Length: 397
Image (cartoon, rainbow, N blue to C red; front, side, top):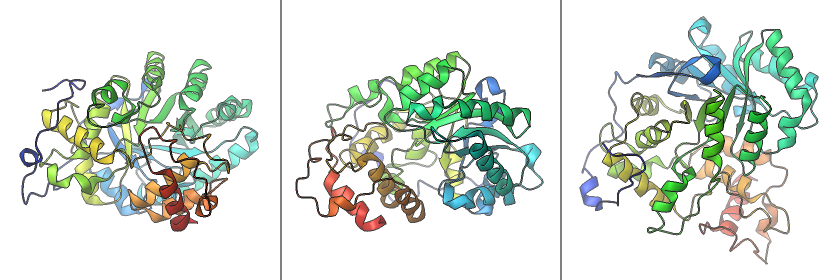
């Protein structure tokens, strides 16, 4: 076994590839082998759990349950509420066997009444009288978590039995500041954060010999450690760094796929309890849950992670970087535009991409006629911003 921080150099491609092998094939008996305590909530959740941002199929929810997944994550905005409805339909009669989490985007000026209305809408779609964790969704502005109405609303909803625990999710450039405030003021029982190999400064330092790479959110591990010290549950998302799984198939082995390596890397962190990941097919669920259990990394896992990072260099916009934020005189939210494009190009989820793009305050239409291209040198890892934002505007507007 190899320590997760002893990154090895990439072996020659021929030594990794196994010709004609379908590396994604998994045993029909694949299932969850480890359940973890989610911090002070005391909830015992599957180490690899169901994310519904890209699906609204009750059959997938049932398949995940059959494979031992017991924690199902959704949001009022996922597929216009259809994801919550699919989970509610699939899990009828099984409420005592599963744990439900959902989210709302409670704003800095929203009232308790606004928040309660959103919660009750989610409960109706989920066909339940309570959720186990209720998150303030995608927080990237401290003012949203500072809003006293959020704290008062969640306390009221707890007393009424509509939520058991409250949380915060995020993946933006201000994530660490938002986490620090929420943790320091005891506003969360659970946090859900973007976390993958690109967020580990020790890993990115070791990879500088391969390509120009920039460590992002170097203080995120510190914030997560502080959360763990306070016994706050920590769940990771966006663990697959864009999820270009097909790019890696020729390098994989049975029970040694890139996704499984990425999951083991995340779960080997002492600061992470569990992860959620979007699941869009029964075969994908079987592949993912095969990584459940003792998260020990092998030499092959580390080679896959480094190779994937090398393949993604220069075309993956890293969540939380936002180095380009001040570069556009038209105030295009570049990182958010590129995130929506990723959902279409990398995830293959046009519906999610279009919905998220439509929700942006400023899209990328200005990029179609831009002549100055002030953003060209703004990315520290050389993502072709102008090309990608124009592409996003053409695809999604």
